[in-house]
Length: 451
Image: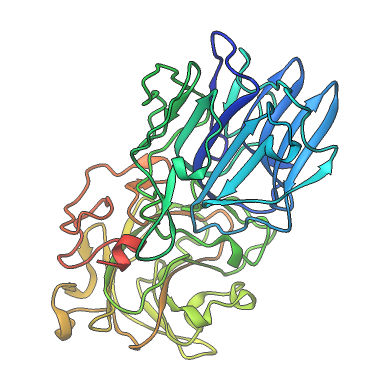
């Protein structure tokens, strides 16, 4: 969401003592100061909000007469930027036992709450949520506490306190918590269901409690709780002022100094055939195209090596924009040799990684370099490299100048917030790309890894 948030003001107050909020969320950032808001409302200056604090704890806050009451999940921080979290907050202040008045579930498990400041609400307490005041998702109204990431299947229940099992269930095979796409709940007057299978803010419950986009751009993503796509891993960044945005699929901003820096994907594979796309958004005009794209052995993805280009590492393979050369590492330096065309601003590079035959191919704007044929199997016709087998590889990217920006499309169908102009074919049915996905290849996602 970045600077995007949703808003709605109910026409009348609902049940302010008893309600349930459920959502699947995927974080793009960690350690954001002062906080990032998931959901909340403000009544006469007194907020009732659910947010991640700067230490990545999850906090529910309700204000009474200017005093902050805080409940924090005990001994847990939430710093996984690859996984989807299922969060359920239930409130029922009619309960005589104070610990039963607020419950938070993460991925189906009820959490232990700590009274980090004043704590649980009094019996029959009525807060700002479900009053006829502005409600926001992804920001606290009047403040810039934006949630940067993705949200899906957001439910609000007016008048009933449900537990997590109403919205999710344990997979009988994997034992993992998974989404229920067809829930059976009573929404009540102010209840709603938005962001169902896309970016629609139209209420999918029996009500018509639609939201509006209060700011920013709401972008559809194929990445969802049942199919997690690869993104750039922010935990591997070597400098703090590298700016990743749009769900960690776009790099912008200028570091304090120019230097080679590498970026790595959140998902890797050791077998199968995968395809993704890389777009150059902006270059340094005085010395253009100091950008590289390729793959790296997951074991070589080390924080201390990020201040360099990834192809210095052993079992790393890349395609350099400036000279059109291919580069591979020997553990201390790169070996560069003639390969293909130069690529520059607005060019799209496609990467076809065939781990079953230990080959990798690159195209520029749909034309495979060196007359490559990703469907040629073991013959590896025109492949850029015969790569080391038995390795788990991650997507890898590098750039030198801070104002060299790029976007990646791992299958969401967007470069940044711009949709692909005309989606290519994809027989796997997994992911949306600008160019045709070679037959037998798929997106690097949890679904793709299990095809």
